[in-house]
Each structure stands twice: as C-alpha cells, then as structure tokens.
Image (cartoon, rainbow, N blue to C red; front, side):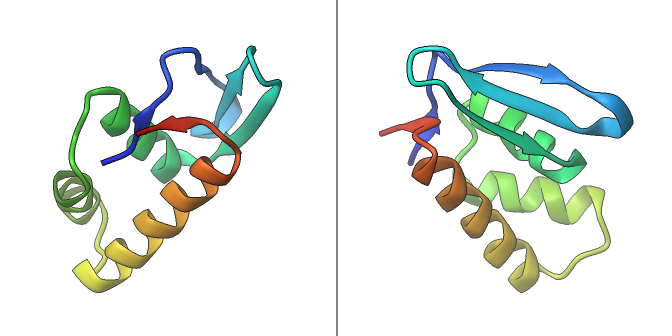
Length: 85
C-alpha cells in the first residue's frame, strides 16, 4: 500500500479544500473535501479497504463508485510523486 511521503505538507484552504506540497520536489496538488479525507487516511496509514469504508460511511456513495474514485485519486497522487511505497 502506498503512503503519503513524510516530506509532504498540507494546508487547509477555503471551503474544505486542501493543498498538498512536497518541498523536496516542488510538486503540489489541490484537493477537495473527499480528497482531504483520503489524504488524512493515508497519513494515518489506513489501507485501501479502510479508506473506501470511511468514504462510504461519510458520503452516500456505493462501494463500487468509492473504489474507483479512491483508486483514481491515489493514482493521481502517485503520478505527482506525493506517495511512497
């Protein structure tokens, strides 16, 4: 399971949005409220199943949709080099 790099900083912005920034690479990403929850879960070393469970519990979304959305989000974070193995 991928995890958030220790060097990644995050700051809450206006309207539940959050900005992630890795000062070692200069890479950044702005995320919405759901993305912020995923980031916090990654920071707490949740596995993918636990993250999906949390999203399903908080939002009225079916598991299949949550699985796809979480996977896409984590893939985008990985492409921006914000995650470690």
